[in-house]
Length: 227
Ligand SMILES: [Zn+2]
Image (cartoon, rainbow, N blue to C red):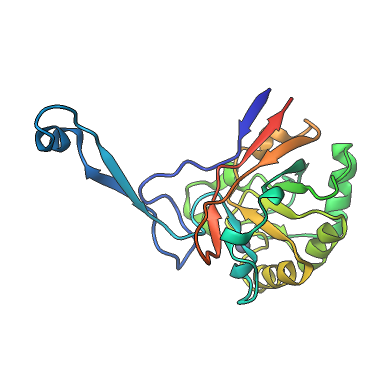
């Protein structure tokens, strides 16, 4: 078995979505401090973090798209452990729309079919090209509404992308989120290392969210597993 890590490293002040709170990771209690406090028996260090529920590699809960959408604590865990494929879309320029035609071509090139009830990961090369520069937060290519509808029609439960948003920045991205609610699918954002999956066929995708009550999303440790 081989596990490919598709998750961004989390660290103090790693880029977050424009307008969302920063990711804070710090020392709550140092080893030295704890050692003194515990009477020189054992000094346990503790760190703390604060982050938006859409920080780092994460899954959007349908609650993010609308007040009646399923929150992350009620999102089916079965959907977080599914078969997946990865499509090579690295030829799509920054900020451009990925269309149904692009997806169809990429599926043909990948030589595998889209697993029913599974996921499709879109490798745009955006993370590889831009992280952690300012362009990472703005310049991604992404699906348009027609491509989102096309993906949903293939019977997937979600799709994933190696950028902070599924559509290109602006109105299209907003409409893609709305379409996800209507089509009853969701998406995974800020994946990385998708290049490692290209040409490798089908894998098992695993990415469980944390159980935030009423949460609109959650960081996940996304991986692809090969037998
Ligand atoms: Zn989203």
